[in-house]
Amino acid sequence: GLCWVFLVITGLCWVLLGKWRSCMEVREAYGALGFSLNIAPQQEIAGDHLRVCAQGHTCCSAEMEDKLGQHSKVELEGMMEETSSTLRSTFISRHKKFDEFFLELLDNSEKSLNDMFVRTYGKLYTHNSEIFEDLFSELKRYYTGGNVNLEEMLNDFWSRLLERMFQLLNSQYTFTDDYLECISKYTDQLKPFGDVPRKLKAQVTRAFIAARTFVQGLMVGREVANRVAKVNISPGCSKALTKMLYCPYCGGLPGLRPCGNYCQNVMKGCLANQADLDPEWNLFIDAMLLVAERLEGPFNIEAVMEPIDVKISEAIMTMQDNSMQVSAKVFQGCGHPKPAGMSRSARGISDVFNSRFRPYSPEERPTTAAGTSLDRLVIDIKEKLKKSKKFWSTLPDAICTKERASEDEEQCWNSHTKGRYFPEVVKDGLTNQLNNPEVEVDITRPDTFIRQQIMALRVMTNKLRNAYNGNDIYFQDSSEFCNTQPVSMVTLYSFP
Image (cartoon, rainbow, N blue to C red; front, side, top):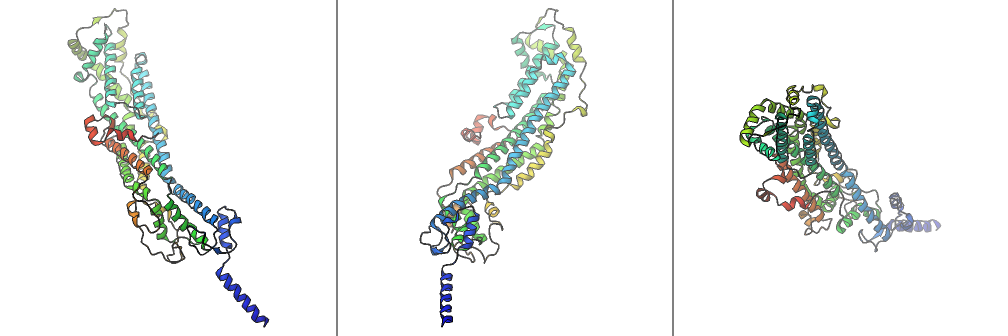
């Protein structure tokens, strides 16, 4: 008789245990997330209070479900942070490296010119060095984002140099300001410096436009990536995340990972706006790659700036060689200047000029800027840029890896139980989320923040395409400019 009673009792226990299972495993997993266990039931309770997970027997109190919901948001933010960290750090570090390189290159070129001209022309140079200092400070101002018209600035440099040299080569005369102005009118006609100014203008302009625009592009890439990696989590996404990541806890299956396609659908819904950035991002990366090719080839600023001292010196020698013809032409056009009192040491100047300079021997050239070369920097960045294409649309793949989603299609969490997930994976982007079975997405309201980033990329891509063709977007003819790009768009979105 006792035996029979014992069997009945144990039978009842099994029935009860079968119905109200222990929540030990869930408590452990919940505690491992760093939460206090005093709100976690020891065994299953009725789940009428649950708002996201299935109501039925559950290991979750209402407060637990809330806390897990909050935690799922933090988790998505963490996943985005982690998944985008390589992309973000690439843009941060390469922007810094290119910027350092270009600034150091300018400093080196200026120092090199200064050293060479001091040795070649001595006091003659030091008394007139502000012309060259101004040239470099304007180049630097342009590079760092100043509104400098490179062509006009370079024309101005050669005009000033002509005025100054004309006075030095004709020091037996005095020249009024009006007379000097007349001289500069002859710059184009006389070509006193030979072909150097024309060639240099083309090279410097293209190289500086490309360098500056490329560095701005790296900065825009950096800002956009940093901003878009911070997700705006909608209530619909939050609910779907909780269901995917933590409803298995409430159902007593804390170790069960979501099915792969289920995870994809949740991420496509949560990151729909990010995916919409992709087409514009890819065009931006393509434009960056085109300008990178220019930097390696004909628009290589290093190849232009390194020999600039020798080029300018050649131009000065050409002017010396032609000084008689140039002076005769100017006197003919501008009238004969008044003789100066001979007290000025007129004699010595032409002797200094005739000493002709000795160009640097190669081993005296300054070492390359920032311990690297432009070619090396460009090879490195091109490879990194290529890898970053399609980054935003492949985020669901990057997040639903085998560490986070189950590879076993049968033994996985399918949103309500352990088993196969049947719905198909939806396509990328906002408009395709109309049919997303997991996330409620309001497809009529694109994320304005992401739209701003799309706009910023569009403006930058336009600048890059112009730079690729050797044009500076700020200095096109204004009527032509308005046809290609409303002015407000350029100013509309500038980064700090």
